[in-house]
Length: 378
Image (cartoon, rainbow, N blue to C red; front, side, top):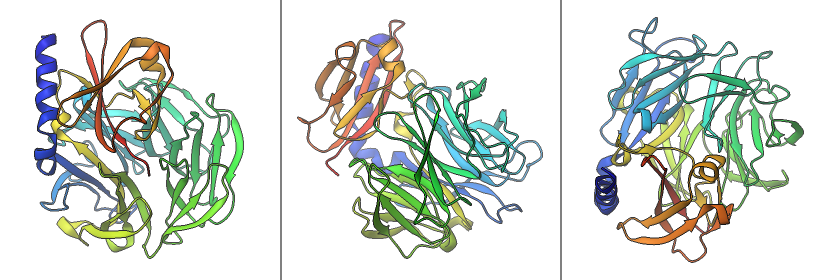
């Protein structure tokens, strides 16, 4: 079985380039009428074609979604989580069919964004004006704790810097707050230049990009929170961001009911998902999924390193505690490097050319963990 796992992984990597367009999908959360129906999760080919309704609200009372906010795939379980502001719950669905399985968690403050941290826990933001601390859950839905020492009102964007500090945006506060690795409040990181921030994201240069829903643009700040100017403008209610393998950004252009693509420097490329495609009304989350990597024999989507793009990658606590070696493969399946994790907490990918690579770690029980990274100078 061990040999078969590696053979299968090698086949997957070998055909990644040729099958990319057919095996990678864009999932878009559609807020529809916000606090009123319709709501849905859409799926598109990576070029924006072939729109399909993946999950809708037909059976909202028991099986649908209510004002969906975010999409999180747990590939090793073959499930996808949808955070629902209406209903105050996170629903669990089959990752391939969208069929409802059960409720993952009930979140009294109204769940918005979800991300897996370096500790393999799921971090969940809350919209409420009073119940608004960042929550943590095990990947089986077990509640862990309120991670942050203070709450962030109408929190709707989160990311980590290279040191592991957590940042959370406040929509109505027009701010971004910083927390240390233990969840202690470090004060406001950004307290000006924002009207209504949603998603936040650190680029490989260590700069923070902020989608400003109210202002209709994307703002850029340096690693100290100093304002650097507008990254991209001319959008309407931007919300939802993910990164293509070539480093380009997919941004939900909510008010125009479309998803636009930008270069890493903020230059507009194209409208990848056209306005209203498949009935799209108000995109508020954009998530790429590589279906080619969705194999149950491996634990996929686990966090081995953060960030997932750049030249410097920090090993997660899970990687340090459970694995000794990580092997790096390029998209042709060629082994390019092997790293002994316990000898270094940070891996510098300076010798590799820009492009997609796969990190593969194997546990003592024979399970494999695979994470895709993008080596980039941007």
